[in-house]
Length: 320
Image 1 (cartoon, one colour):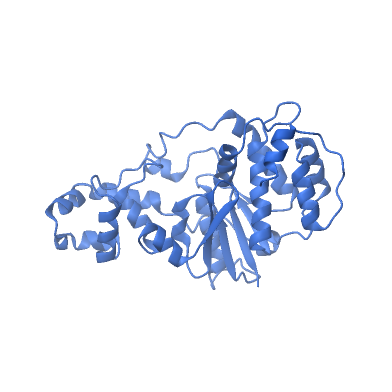
Image 2 (cartoon, helix red, strand yellow):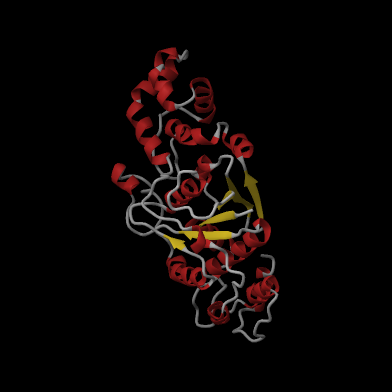
């Protein structure tokens, strides 16, 4: 069975950065905590999910179409810390050294690229698919991607630190969100999203939003039958913020037709991830524990000498 694992690069990198101590650095002071955590999660994913194919998607710095639609989109989010910015290129180098394809596209978030790849490999009409993918698992910390879950797509989400994760299928996604996965954009259209800073319908919370969607089936059908909303206060709020609801629905919906081409053969997981370039990178970064771990995974001897990191941090990193 062919299993494709898609990594939400930015989400995992951010999680790793905030989970591990900033004292983890190279001897010359380059921060490495985000890189270390990212690789630790990547290796655990490979061990647990056993993919035959793997690809990673990253955001780009340029504004996306969502910012064009709504200039306040994610406006309150702080600028990426310099210590994290300095590690982005290193992570790209590590992923490339492991022979894994990276997807980025101006105007789109990594979410959209993951959604588009999942749609391509899951469609029987896909023109780019030359080898069947039976299952797709998206690794992310972003609950918005639960909307992509279906009989072929699952989400693997960290639930505690970097060491505990949960696999979300359709049942688990509905239990978490209160609606079936495909209605999550509709849920966000009504509730809004404080994290992404878009409004939804003022005064409509999760409980009311879930009840309305379970009754009417979608935001579109809700507004088609607005006169059937019994509570006059709720009906008034919906009518007043109709435009916000429609805008929020567009912002919340993960794009599944981004202009990218996924070729499964190029995403086949290499039998030997521990390339000479990886060995040199990990040596320069001081990743002694990860180097040993990869050697064990690949059943391959690794060099015994790497540049040291602080002993306290090295012991802590062994937990991951």
